[in-house]
Image (tube, rainbow, N blue to C red; front, side):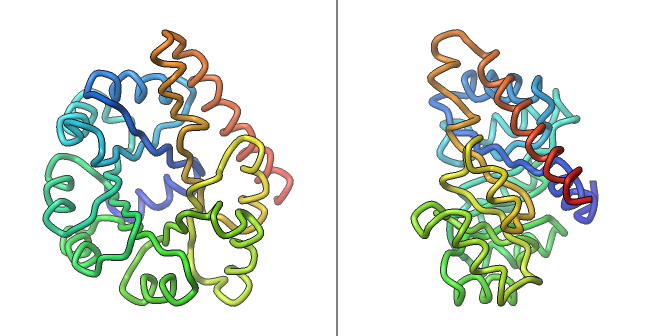
Length: 217
């Protein structure tokens, strides 16, 4: 899938679930539960033990899921993830080498930034979308609204503080898509043998995105 198609898919689905788990098996089970709810985008963070194996397995067995690598802190890790099937790369911070590596492979790159200076620096360095993280620490959706005022051209994915209760507010503020953590990627529910909780949450998030776009159009 070419980069332009990846970015189009991210925008259309409107969600980037941030997958964190304690093992490969638990990560794969979470991925299946999320996909069952219709969310076919997934960010596998490098904090997951065996994250590379998770990406490789999903790339082979679930080609319908758009797999991204998360918590990528350097160019070497980015390259490794890309070679194992990651179609986009996300970082909690700005690393210019990572952006350069992703450009080399024509892979979508979403570096993290928080302040206006960091966000503009990331955009000028070639970020396809800027991950605003942690959005909740700066006031949530109101902060994104404030950023989009002088920076309407910069595509942003807020992460941190996004929940079913705040999703619509972030979309209204101009989010390109929503980075969603534990409110969707519910490890506790999975540990209790209730994957349906995760699946239902995925459906609810998609419904919020759909309703927002229908109202906007």
